[in-house]
Length: 493
Image 1 (tube, rainbow, N blue to C red):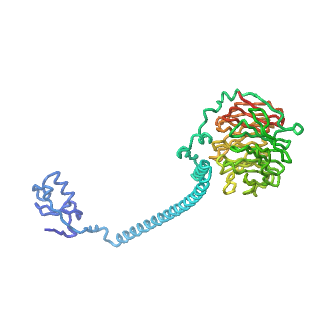
Image 2 (cartoon, helix red, strand yellow):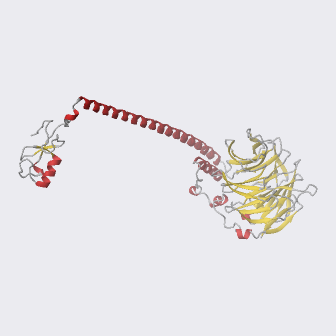
Image 3 (spheres, rainbow, N blue to C red):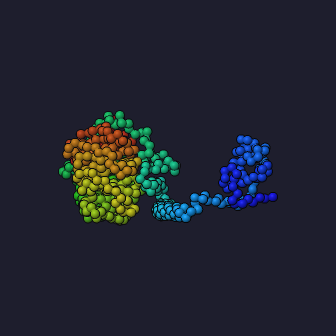
C-alpha cells in the first residue's frame, strides 16, 4: 500500500516538509528518514510515544518532489519583489559569465585553427621536400639527402635545441664522424698540437716576379695534395709527400683569390678578379669549364656538399649558384636592400643554407632553396674578410677588418664569443678542422684555438708576409699555410 502525504505534511520534530518521508508503524507519524534514523540510533524508541522502534520497521513513502511552503515573511509584496530582483540579478550575472566564456572559447578556437593551418603548411612543405629528396636519392647521394631532410625537420621544430636524430636513423659511423658527432680517435690531442713546429717550407711554387700566394686548399680525400692560387695568375697543385708540383694551371688573366679541391674527383676550381670561375682537370692539366656568373671580381667560392654545384660571391653584389658540369648559372641573387659588394661566401656543411660577408660588415645567412636572406649577424666593423662553418653545423666563425674573430651560435642566432686580436691584425683566413675541434686563424700570424674553450694553443710567426691561407691535414696531423711571402709552410710534431 502506498501512502501519499499532503504537500503540507510537516515533520513533527523539525516542523519542515520532509524530503525523504517515512512512516513509523508504532505511532503512525510521518518523519524525515535521516532524523528518525538518528533518533532511533540514539534511543531505540518512537519519539512520539516512546515505544520500541527499529530502522527496519520504517516504511518509505513515495511522493512527488515536495515543494516547501515559503515562510510567512516571504509572502509579502516587498519580499516577492526582492526575490524577483534577486532572481533577475542572478540571471544577468549568469548571462554575463556565459558571454565571457563564449568569447574565450572563440579565441581558443581561432588559435587552434591557426595552429592547424600552420601545421598543415609545414607538413605540406616537408612532404614536398621528402618527395623531392626521394627522387634524388633514387639516383645518387642517399646519405647526403638524408642529412638534408634531417636538417629541414630540425628547422621546422622551432627555436629550441637541435634535434639529435642522426643516431635514431642508423647512420653509419663514418658519416657521424665526418659530421662532427664524435671526435675521431686519430685526432691529434691538444697537448700534442701545442708542440707543433715548422717542419717544411716551399717557396718555388709561384712566380717570384709577382710575389704572393693568395689562396689555399687541401684535397679532402688525400691531404698530401695541396692547391694554391697566386698573384701570378696561376693555380698550382703540389704533392706534400713527394715534395713536387703535380700541375701548374694557367688561364686566368688576373690573380687567383680562391681555390677549391674537389673531394672525390681529380678536379679543382679557382676564382679571380677577372670575373670568371674556372674548372680544371688536374690529370689533364687544362681548363675544362669557364663559369661566367659575374660582372665584377669574384670574391668568394664554395663547393656544395653534393660536389656538383658552386657558390660564388662577387663585388657586383650578387651571389650565384652554378652547375660545374655544364658551367650554367642556375640562379643569381642580390640583396637589393643592402646594395653593397659581397666579400666572401661559404656553404653550411648540410648544403641547405650558406653565409656571405659584405663590404659593410654584415654577415648574411641565406636559404638556398628559397633564395632568401633568412638571418643577419651585425657586429663587425669594416668589410668581412672570411667566414667558416664548423663541421657539426652549430657554429659560424667570422673575421673582418676590425682585428677580431666572432663566433656565432646558429641555433640561437647570436654572438656568444668574440676573440679580440692585436691592433691592426689582419684576418685573412678562418678554418675549422674536420672534427670541429680546432679553429685556425690566418692573418698577421697563425693562431689555433681549441673550440668550446676558445683558448689559444698555437701561434706561428714564421711567415714574413701576411698569411692568406690556413688548412688542417687529416685529423689535424699537420697544419699548412700560405702567405704573401710566396711560401707554403707545413707544421707538425
